[in-house]
Image 1 (cartoon, rainbow, N blue to C red):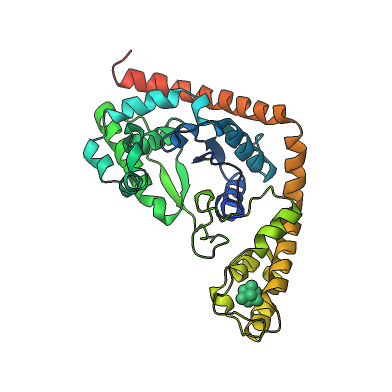
Image 2 (cartoon, rainbow, N blue to C red):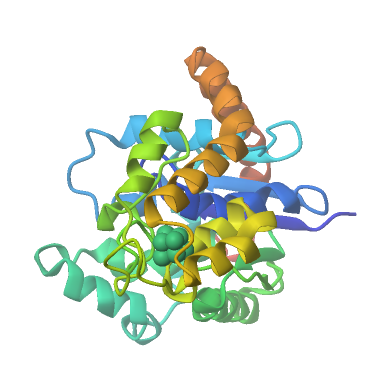
Length: 324
Ligand code: SF4
């Protein structure tokens, strides 16, 4: 029997090449080996989103990007977190076995307190409990994580152990599938590519928009004039060539160091390669976008299938906890 994988992403809008290289390509690959459950975690988004007017379009866009990129609704369950309300019930049950001290020491909670001091809501503290509920509601055994997320998964495992100790073996302890997510820097060349840093190249841009964005990217700051030799090892454009144009990286490095190529031409070449690599994705995405009902149907079917598992788990949990 194949093991079950769970992973989720917050609906922050259209996905960018950082998401693509870091998570989406991995999600697609995992489908060959595991039964995968992929969730758009809209309830998590509410912990830091006070204006929800774009939430529905963000959910639609992330689903479009995922499916167009090869996350296959026939093989995987793709759904929206809030469409399976049992997760909130399990979150409440798990909150009864999770000591507050465990949650208050979570580094990301402390960071969020600093980031949004005007909105330190109860949901922020309980975020890891809801994350645990996300995973174990489906009895997922495997969670793909980067090294930085290991402490979160360890907390989930502690919550599971505590529940199982108190109420009997109910949940498998989810294990990390350590994945080396490459750190993709944004167009500013400094910060991780992300919507909040406004430094992204979105997957769904047109070829022209992609080229325009790439042309604004920061390169080697020491290379001020065309005849200055460059330092590809510190240039973000060069790093992106490694992903989208691996066959030419040696030659680009040599031409950069000897000033045989200028940054403008180097960026144009990168934009061409990105556009070529994303062309099949963009074609599939455009076809899907033309029929919004198709994505709605995928998410509804995903929620229906997820709910079958969720209801079974909740019924077992209620019995274990003496609620039935
Ligand atoms: S030539 Fe290319 S690799 Fe070299 S600094 Fe310019 S953009 Fe970067």
